[in-house]
Length: 395
Image (cartoon, rainbow, N blue to C red; front, side):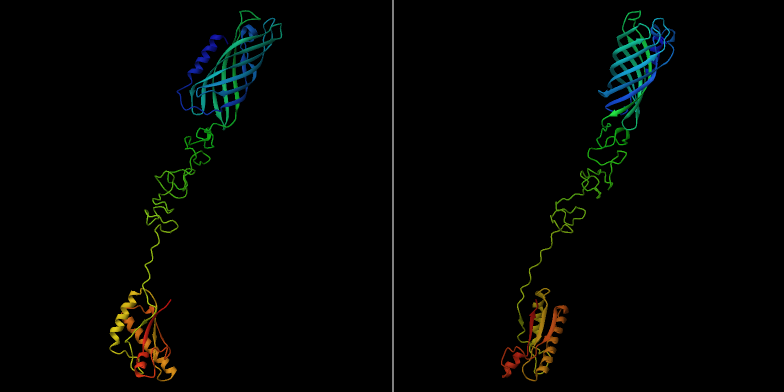
C-alpha cells in the first residue's frame, strides 16, 4: 500500500462520521490492550509491503474535555521482509498525542488521532535505528458494559530521515483492535449511583432515590421524589417538600385540621378542647319550706305547689347536678311505718318535679322516716315542720 492509498482510506473513514449527537460515556481514564496487523514500508520490507504482519500493544487513555482525549501507546510487530541487507525486522513504536472526538454518537464516538513518538527498528541485517516519528489515525470507540470500551483504529506512522537506509523516512500502516478497562468510578453525571451507560433518567435531581435504571422513585405519586419527599407515603401534589400544608404549625395537616388557623398540638382534630362552663352555684341542701303533708298522708298540700314550681326552676339552673329527694315524718306511729310513709312522700315530690321538666335520671327519692327532726315532735307545730321534703345535691 502506498502513501496515496493510505491517505484516501483515512479521508474516507473520516467522512463516515455522521452528525454530532450525545457523546457516548467513556471512562475518565482507561488501560487497554491492542492487537492487529501492520503493513511495512517498501523501503524496509521490499516486496513484502503488501503482507499483513501481526501487531500487539498496550494503550493508556485519559479524557481532557468533552472533545479531546490524551493517549499513549506502545505497539510491537514482527515484519517479514526480502530487501537485501535488511530482511526481516522488528518494529516498536512509542506514541503519545491527542484524540479529537469529531462525531459523538449515543453508543460510540468517532475520533481522529494525532501524535508524536519514536520508531525503533531492528533488522536481521546490519540495519538498526531509532527515529522520531509522527502519527495520524482514525477510528471508533464503543461503550462496553458499565466502564469498559472496545475500539478500532487505522493509522499511519511516518518516521523522519533521508531517502536511503539506514536513515530513510518510513511510512508504516496499522489496523488495530483494542479493549480498554476503565480506571476508577464509572461516569455518573447526576450522582444518583447509577452509571451513565445504565441510567435511563440521566437528569435525576440530587438527593432523589432511584431504581436500578436510575429513575426517581415516587412512592406516594405526588410528584415529589423519595429522598426529597419529607412525607413519602402521604400524597401532597404541588408542594415543595411533599408534605400536606399545616397552616397553624400544630402538627395536624390542614386536610385533617378542623381548626386550621388555631394551633392545637396533641389534639386529634386540630381544635383546642372546649373550655368547660363554670359549674352552677349549687347549694349544699335546699329545704323546701312550706312543702308539708297532712298527718299520715303523702298527698301534697295546695300551698306546696307554688314552692315546688320554684324548686323545679332552681334544679334547672343547677345544670346536670344529681339530686336526692329526701322525705321525712314526725314521730307519730312506729319507725317502720314512718320510714315507708317518708318514702311515699319523697316519691310524690320526685314525680311532681319530673312532670315539671326535670330529668328523671337526675332525681332519686329516699325516705328517712322520723330521723333528723328539725322541730320538737312534742308539739303539733313541731310535728308539722318535721313532715317535710329536702333536696340534697349529690357529689
